[in-house]
Length: 269
Image (cartoon, rainbow, N blue to C red; front, side, top):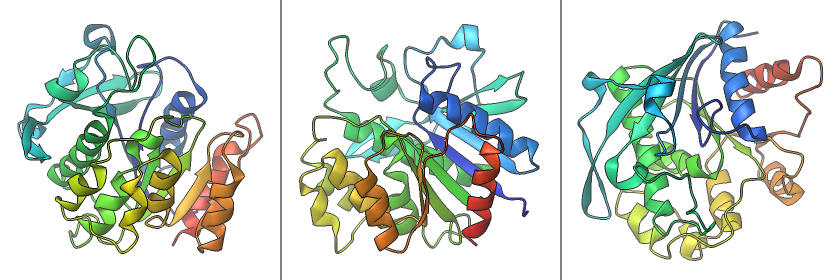
């Protein structure tokens, strides 16, 4: 089996957030692929509920300091890093005072989704890709986990597509039972069009529901993985019909579970 350079863009990873199906898989998949000889880089947002002292996060000065413009506003990009000693892997964190200082993830204390989640996920995706460019590290595979990372394939295909770092990359998205219920900002289309993302099918996100966002995103990826048994089968059926490589849900308790991912990555090339 081939060795790959894999970029993981994750919405959540344990132990930095509580254990869920998604946070556990992102944590263990990063370790499993590294142990199989792949070179990995793993990113997640530095949500304000993450205790920096307890988790020993520290800023990477050489990677920080860039400003990203989101909807005509400047936002400073701060990069932090921490290690999971038991796994011998590093996690990079995308941080910004405007988007990630609140002590929550994607909803407030009453369970209401943040009105600026669209800009937060755009900042996260762009922050990851700009940081990878600064690292001068060329991934073979970019694997996005969770809807908060879902916008990254659009940037890879429409903004960074001619960059030597990302030009030949294969893109995978994993779907989970993590949907948002309220549509994102109705201005999402105009915000990302202003960044150079233009596509004949972009009108689908005039109503930026979870379903419409993923239908648009899946048109840009090479592979789709069901990370949860609860993933709506219609997404997988639509991906297959569009000629995408699909990995159906497999229980992590199954023997050789991570070998499924290794084979899936190999078959993208």
